[in-house]
Length: 272
Ligand SMILES: [Zn+2]
Image (cartoon, rainbow, N blue to C red):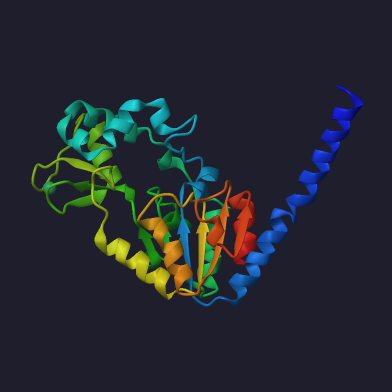
């Protein structure tokens, strides 16, 4: 390395330092001041809030679909319905899901704090892991727009039961348990590809966004629609927007404050 390149590198390093700005904790404190002033907060959570509970993502290096391409195929409704072997594999995957042992982390618990301050109006989540319920959030305030993996649903009638009821049948030897009411195909009560979202859930999420004074998006890349629309909807009505995520999101440009860093560390600061 020549002296000249060493010099330019050190200039670049100090330039990075000077644009790096305030620490994540300082930015989180700025977001906390907005939360202090707000009276009606809507929170949208995505996969990022559950990674500290060791819920694997889908497409990352250790992702569920990266490690098991058949599971990705089974996530499309048409395939799941058409191919009994995919369903049998899906039941075996569900049996061993890390979700059953997962526990809420400080991020989930922080949102409980927001509820106790009487500021949390609605908690919209893209997650299917049930960890907001497990953390003790008021179930009437939670909207699970992508459904829940903690329940099983019949594709033909309105039968629903806890997932563990169906998994007990698998443990007892049924490799593709059917609906005890109508004999239809059972699936986790999540929204698969090719399956419609529940209109009532999307309506609740949008109505909440339109009537909040602060929207806090946590752990979502805000790239999945229609749920990500809650951010521009809230913005349109004049609500403050706070985004907390490990990486940049599609909607950072709409935010009053963007907090970048660990959700478990920073969300407790933001909710006060
Ligand atoms: Zn049925």
